[in-house]
Length: 318
Length: 261
Image 1 (cartoon, each protein chain N blue to C red):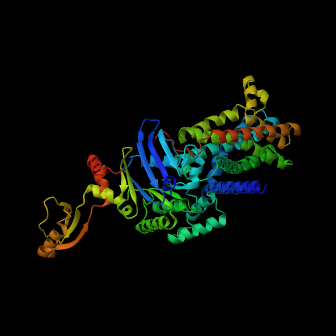
Image 2 (image 1 turned 90 degrees about the vertical axis):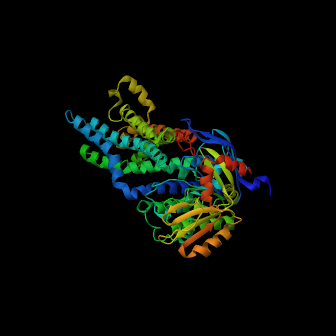
Image 3 (image 1 turned 45 degrees about the vertical axis):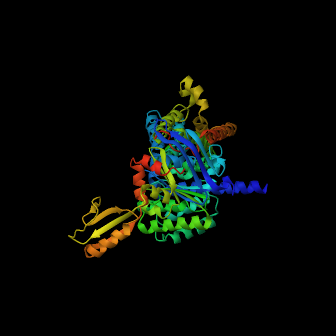
């Protein structure tokens, strides 16, 4: 496979400074591999949406280059919609469309016939269990349902690359779960590449292959989920839920998350022997517990909370 | 040849579905659209009838009547197109269209058709009320009236699209269209004969499509000569082509996001 085939997007030294001099993206270099799910994380106002808008040609970079499947997108802007489907943050617009009409119209605009568009729309509506709301006007729907109609629009008349900008905001857990499994299915069975911008890091952890973190316009970390988590710590996190009014002997560094909920970290070499001992002596006081390695959320918090220098030393891998 | 026919059919198909999608708004808000688009030309019409009533003149009433229809046709498409594009940009809804493989030209044509469709009810209301007030018995040149109406409406569609796409912010788009509208209508022989305008305006009005739109509509209502009508239609067609071509060349399609945020 050639270099061209490996990466769908190649972003080189991308800088975006708005007319009002706000530096939204600062020298970002990143490659997105064909068939991967890349999670793009960052605090509000960090420059994620600005980056995405440049990737789909809605904004021009101030400096740097973006190559899409070997094409310079500044020169071949018209090719972007043929390769990339995008779900943005449109909100309450298109209120006069019915839920299914928005999806079908998108299919027609992407080149489908009316029959094909209806067929694909019906299949998406069925998969996501939306038959009840399919004929309702969008202005009559909840925020999550309105968002879902736009997300499904990104899937009709499939493009090889799909960019979803905060797709699960306001969405109920059932639809969120279906969305994640659908993304996984498209990625696995059809090799679709996904760029997923989300604040829902816990749920995205099981989905994404790699992660890119942006803060104050700069790409401060990127790599596999495992590499990012390992950079935080390789130890074992323990969540301990005690029975009402009980106390146990736990490390002094333990954090009291809620009344009976304690959280602490044990060295991976001795974690299980220490837990074994704790349960033997004080197991009757423990209501429930959870043992895990560092989560992606913890890694994200670690990376974004000014502990960047430590992270960069620990993870010099590009 | 077969390929060209297929491309043309596909283009018409896509324009129709963009137009249809835009018309869905009518399902929910048709009443308010009719009121909004009718109020301005109807107000002018009645004001001029009352003004003329002190010295009744069939000619002035005809100008008031035909001028109201022309103003409604010419400005509705421009105003509607500019404000629609501005509104789509404001709600980020333009991003939806701009990230799909839709051509700028098809989008402009579909939105122009939307603007013209939305202006039709108000023009029909102006026509029905105005005709009964000035006593127009029947319109024998209906096809010519429709031709004049559509040529007039399209004549400023391109300008509306250009303003819609080029304005720095959606608010500035809305303001620009509203500032331009009175210049187009009141600085041209729309509501009164050209001789009544100051000399400078008599000259400059020749560059405004409203001049030719009003004249073509007056002919379609039974006043004037056919040769003059055909020349007016040709000029309006030239305005339409130049405007849409200008919008097609200059409008920043896809670069829809404001650069100032």
